[in-house]
Image 1 (cartoon, helix red, strand yellow):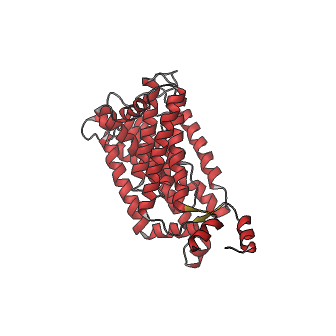
Image 2 (cartoon, helix red, strand yellow; image 1 turned 135 degrees about the vertical axis):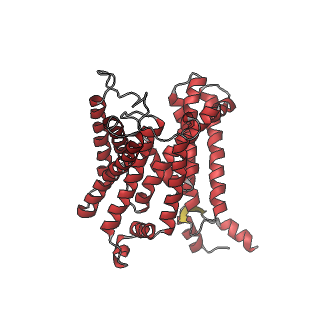
Image 3 (cartoon, rainbow, N blue to C red; image 1 turned 30 degrees about the horizontal axis):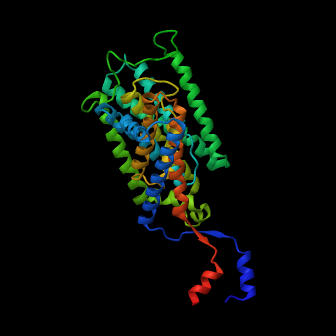
Length: 377
């Protein structure tokens, strides 16, 4: 029987306390995530029945048919996953370095603008193959510049990278809006339309049928694998990880932190610029302020859910694209506004993100005195 002092001490203890898991087995993490997805689906089914009266199974079927209902939808889904994956991979080095780059949209838009500028201004001057080379170099350079500027000011004067990269998004958007008016076609429309639609000058190579955009998918695979090996097996990947863990430690072991910051953001911006090249030269063949469509912000969630592992980002990119395309399909098939489909998407993401807490932390409940006495008996 516990002493009065022990019982008094236990009474003052909180009902439960939280501790961080030292080592999380891979199976445990997978099990928690699967449970989270099942619970999310159950809650979505309940909300669907209560709020709309629709059959939840029909709603879930529409989510999948929106992405894989036809061959064309399937390939479009894979293409969208590829584009989101490239931007997610692009921002990953910066986040591993604890440089909060939320400027993926602006860096990709800068690449879009550079590619469109080459297609429009050089179409009567150079052959198509030469324009493609100029587009590639210009897009990568423009994205790299958009990433380098915040890094330079952060490295030299300690500016806030979140605000700086966010500001660069707005600048890129307004530059694109300005040139959309300069290059508008037809005049007075305020839009560029399909660039070089008749001649297809500057259009990137087509592999298979043009509607499938296999070129973008292949580029995404190459970029994803290259970034994985860069981050895990290259000296630069090791250095940026050390900088992210502790700048003081990085200085101590002889790593030049300023150089690492600028180099890493040059890389991130360059890969985002490559995304802009694909959007203009391969996928859309036009230029608008909404061409990137917020993927730079979605990429932050993709990278975080995958724990900044480029290979796992394939799955998280697929999940978010599936939910986005499924949301539109729900709105069309059931005459529901997209707010309801956004609710379902939010519920699923809430459970998936929330499951990370139970993977990283463990809950310990207060030991009951009566239980302890029974164990002694």
